[in-house]
Amino acid sequence: MHRKSLQALTGKLNALSPLAILFAAAWGEVVKSVAEVEVGGVLKVEFKDGEAVSEVKEKRVLFSQKILYDLFNTAPLNRFRRKKKMQVVVSDTKSGKAYKVAGKDAEASALFVGKRIGEVVNAEILGLGGYELEITGGSDKQGMPMRKDVSGAARKRILISSPPGYRPKERGKRRRKSVRGNEISTEISQINTRIKTYGAKPVEELLA
Image (cartoon, rainbow, N blue to C red; front, side, top):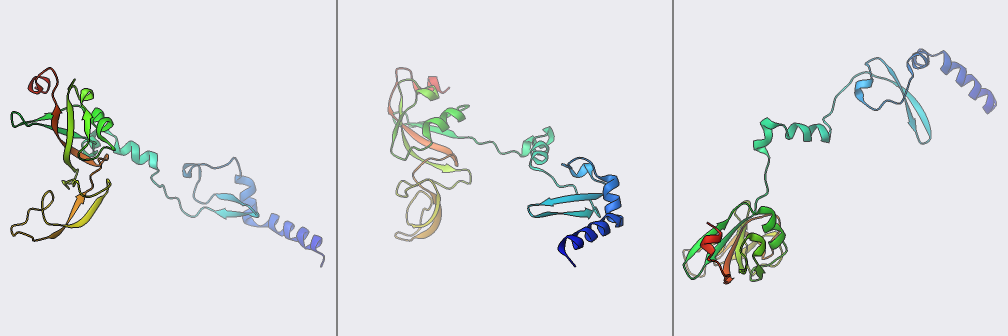
């Protein structure tokens, strides 16, 4: 049998099949959502090298990323959302007092992210005009401390024998602990600083 005759016969048989009849009756526009499909309906699936006709046996609605985002951001669930905060503690070596910079999360992130322990920054963006702060340390959201002798911003598990991160009861004792490197990232929730240069106004007045 010639190929053309075989193709013609196949086409006639397909046209007479119940599936093809259902397809001819139900076929419409391109389907973009499961809501547009009914159980028992017929769909044509197009591939790169051909097409297939299938009958819908079951429907399942999947949560899309947008649905999950909208659900997560509804008012009753707002309390579960994590808010990224970056607290700055300013130590005054003259008075021995420490102050917290409140409500300056965005400014603190812009000023400190990428900086390392030991660096000195201009604190004007924090409302401390004329002041310079030296970064002395910090900790991440899980309370893991930063260490000056560990490079980078990632959390690492290392052997240590002294603070921060481990305070041995016996001299020379070492233990493997998780710590943060000496570079500040967005994962850091508290930054410890000390005043290096004083401004014209007292720090207690500016941070009261």
